[in-house]
Length: 458
Image (cartoon, rainbow, N blue to C red):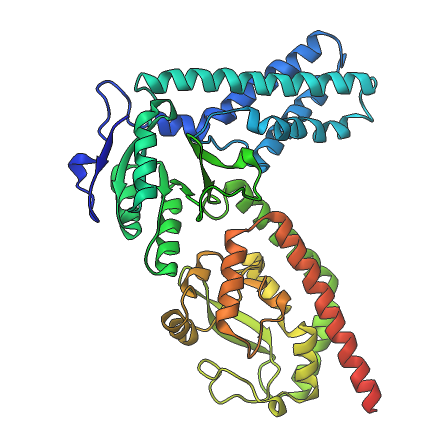
């Protein structure tokens, strides 16, 4: 393993030279595909053995489905990420759980519970054994300078120096490290030198600037881990999820945004749910449109350009809830007296937003995401609110994590940006379902409350 040191700017000639005859991308390829390929081989061996031994006679399709479900479970649990420390024992329990949970679905078609139990045990043993053999082979290759990864160690001070020393003393970790004093320089370094791992020992400077630099590294495909401060304390994180450099624990950051399976799942949910809601609510939408046409002598639909993702603009359509508005593109609040009873009802029940489902079907928006903002205010907030611009890295949504916490209308923009960025960083398919469920509950509660108030006044 070689370690080179640079100042705030990397000197390209010193950046992690590759030993002669070693493919530069070999280590990164192993990090990306090593565990998935190993798991596929182990699952095929376990399923094939179960079929040959007669545990599931004539049910090869069932074994194939089980193996696919276990593979997906391993990926969802984050067990396809190759850690710096290759110790398999830390993850044995989670591997066993990934092998056991899908087996519940086998019980109705299995010859008996004993066959299922034998399959689960065989699968767990095969996965752990294959990973242990692969890790041993990879450590041996690392010691010979093979299949190593390019890494950068960011930060200055004793902690960074200690990590650099430990990485140099342990070639079995397989990292060829360049040191960089400034986190702000990391994106350029990662892009220029094809860095696959980033370790942050210290990150001085503006918090939002540091976060932006690390997000950029993840977008470039780098695996990012940070040293917790103060170090040496137990973390409420499973040991199998942590990285480790010879006793020094590191916290890996979630990988960039949504991977392709997640994007496909989210888009599928958008299409199916938007189409279903439109099919169910079109009578309500039609009655509301007629009411708007009778009460407001203007076009029924209100059209407005919004920033929907990454600075991209799209026209968003709503049912009109105001008779007139002086400048809807630059006026922040809407006086309550301008809405009228119909407008207030449409806004409280969110019926006025149902036409946005068409934007979801077109792909301009998602069901869940940061709310789209008008360009005038998006520019203003991006300049004045730290972290606001970062919320545009995910498509805008009809509802969002901020909205289910009642951060809409004339509420704190800084709070909204914080919730939106937290949603993006911790996005999951399950979180989208939670937000949709809370949105339905919140809208129903507000609508019932409004009807009760109206009934009391009458």
